[in-house]
Amino acid sequence: MRLLLDTNVLIDHFARRMPFFDDVTQLLVAQSFGDVELWASGLSFSDIEYILRANVGVERLRDMMSRSRGFLNVCVPTPDDVWDGMSSGWPDLEDFLIAKAAQRIRADYLITRDAKGFVSSPVRALTPAAFLKLMRDDYHVIYEELMW
Image 1 (cartoon, rainbow, N blue to C red):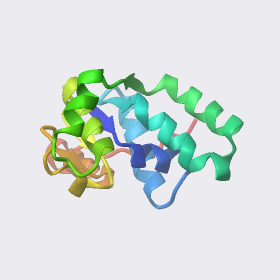
Image 2 (cartoon, rainbow, N blue to C red):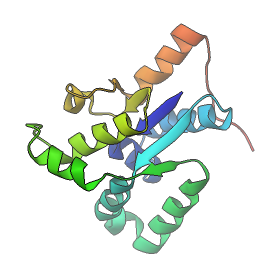
Image 3 (cartoon, rainbow, N blue to C red):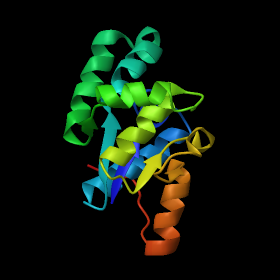
Image 4 (tube, helix red, strand yellow):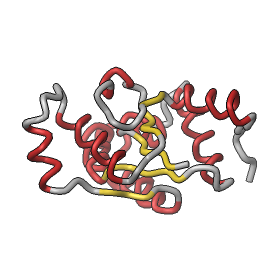
């Protein structure tokens, strides 16, 4: 199953925001078992740095984001995506581009804590908690943090 992680979910991971961090950790566990592929838009990384640089520090943050290379695939918007977004009628260009990325990679779900921002998305948007509940209810799979 292919998941595109919205910027806010990645921020929860890199900033270790509780209680959201625990759900993101479970997504990483699902990825480690090969049950999901985790994807992100390349745009998210510049947004993450802009938002977290004061609290985390640029050097440390870039190190953490670089280490995500081991578990995140990255896609980037095309110029046509940008121009389409400007005439799309979506109230938020960033959300449009995230939804477009999810569509481009043929994601099964767009994972976000702002599902309301993606009501027009061609890819179904779920919170991390809702996705984990779906896995539990529909596939009888429960993820817990791996102990290394």
